[in-house]
Length: 392
Image (cartoon, rainbow, N blue to C red; front, side, top):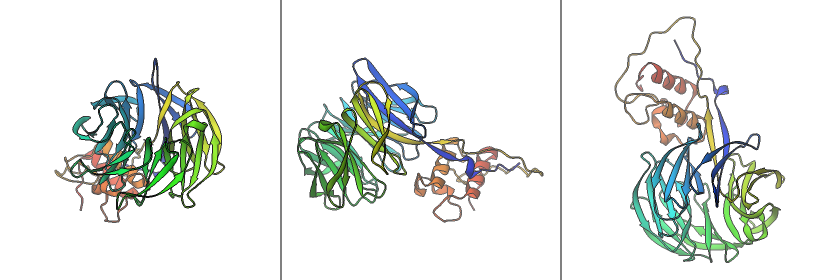
């Protein structure tokens, strides 16, 4: 029997995760981005900041008062693991290969390095006072950490997990983000009222952009616009990065905090502490299309592309012989253990959809095209069902 994988039945469903931390509130709200309705809620102790794995299968939440990072399965939407980190964890970043998390521990003045596969801290790096925001460069070689009370950014070399440089920025730096090509990084200096523009090749500030009380930053897919929560004016500031000016502001709820953008750049989601809401903003019109009620104290926002039903089985008229299991690497065997798991199939689908880079699992790329075709997915599914079919 041949198993056929239909690309029309393979889709990515964007889900928005909102962390609400308030007295008596310990909730992550999951919003379906296709309908802008609450899909479910997940109990997480004092959730603060949110990041997702590159393949969209995991969501990581810092738990402010419990010194943990909790791992959510983005398909089942339940907590499946937790890592112990430093005191008062805030910002979190994930390496492009999905292997490590970098977590800013505010009170401890450290960054914890967490092995995402084992949910275990494997290192701790001293940084400045009250570290808050975390961003990992697209090549995974550098991590920027904003230090709220030091007015600096710590530059971490991921090869050695040491601070190689400290960059002076404005007062009260909070959010930080890299452009997709890694050519620039932007830091939100809440106290100074501007974004610092950093050249990562030199780790130096090369300019500033005036923005009222900036907190968190989300960039458009073309890196031409930044959507910035401006907490003192209860708005999202839309920044033209080329002109280095605020193009417009969008009024939302009180004290906006976290912000995230869908992969296609069509919608921005911004959270406000009170009344506890997430605001869906249409980027083509820069207007709020819906205010979605969530638990009070909405802070961090993250978006994951949850893969839905990657394969269907269709019997052929003439049964084909069962493949003889072949030990060692085969099509889709990312960890080279001689078999193909469901998680590995999900990775293959995400590579085919362009969500994950091919270097996450080159075992899918049989023909050397640097992409994953339907035929290659079919071979990997057959490997999962009938035993490894070796790469030829």
